Picture 1 (tube, one colour):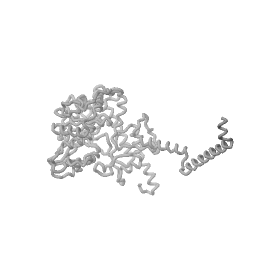
Picture 2 (cartoon, rainbow, N blue to C red; picture 1 turned 45 degrees about the vertical axis):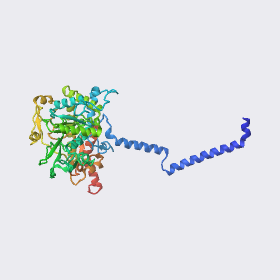
Picture 3 (spheres, one colour; picture 1 turned 120 degrees about the horizontal axis):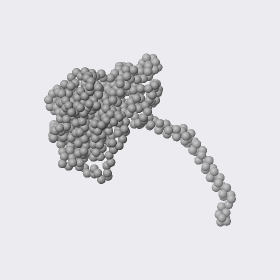
Picture 4 (tube, rainbow, N blue to C red; picture 1 turned 90 degrees about the vertical axis):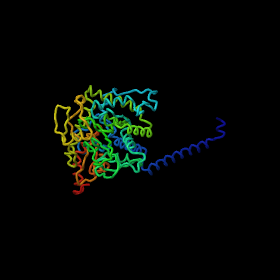
Length: 492
């Protein structure tokens, strides 16, 4: 200590203390000036972060599941506030309630050593198809009676999107002089053109609306039935030879349309996402009659992804088992198809009521269909049953009809209940833009090859979001009245 004071006198310590205090004062002044110049204090920064979190929370509103629903007494400003309702995608989250009640019935445990090989069945044509999944696919179709599985090859894919690409690859000769034309009747599924031309393949190319197609030479026609987006029962429309038909039957299930016949086509595409609601599983399958076409489809999947996730297939097999079991031994919600069909019927009633109240939109009107599995009769849609028979759909056997007794409902024949095909009345020409201004996100008709006066709206979202949507849609005419008064009669 004595040595310390020999080096530093009291005067030296006072100077050092003064320097430290001056430095501290300057730092405080600098930070204060920085906050003023940037217009935001630390507290304001916290407020800004809170605001940002709030906006993000609202943007994620369509991804949250809540048990409560908005009150039916909601006003124009009480229908969810500034919540953005995104109904652009057909994300089937409405099925969550059924699977939550199913509990652990669909749960599987996959040990770390299982499913390690590329091969599921090396001796099978589709060597990456899990035998258990193949067995449940056949059981499901036999239970529902919506497709013929005899004398068919099953090809599994990462969703029906990959299978669609595999079909185009299989049906397009490698040595063709020019790409094979791919067509579908408008309004067609909006992803068909994008998927077809995304790789700019020299094997095939999108050629537009099948109704106006008149090019000579071979072609591929896509038939989606019930159709996405408008819901009508479809058949081929190109009246010329040289075409190969591909039937996309993603929505040919009892919850979307009455199953009066078993589809019997050369190439039929199905997907887990719309049949059971498990879109995130990314599993689809094709029923293919021609062995050479099936081999080429398998080759495409091999080249594209070296097979399909075995874990997803095993989980899909378990899910299909639960679906079949729910048909045989319904829960309090009924079978999966009962649950979804009843929910869809209720949603369509609410939507039609909202459209009538708004007065600004229209929806397609369908003639009532007939369901042979109910103890009631309905006037058949003109030409519906005969057109199905002509296009390769055969009636169900009596045993299959009996199995469907509890799942077929008096819904309208030919309507795809998964989507609403909404039209804005004149003078509104951009229906998507108009609904977007009301914080409802939809998909414009221009993506489906028709007028932008139309939009496709998903009916498959969670209950909370769907109820906010119909409440808001029903009050748009009130919002419009306010806008008209503010602009002296000019509709914005």
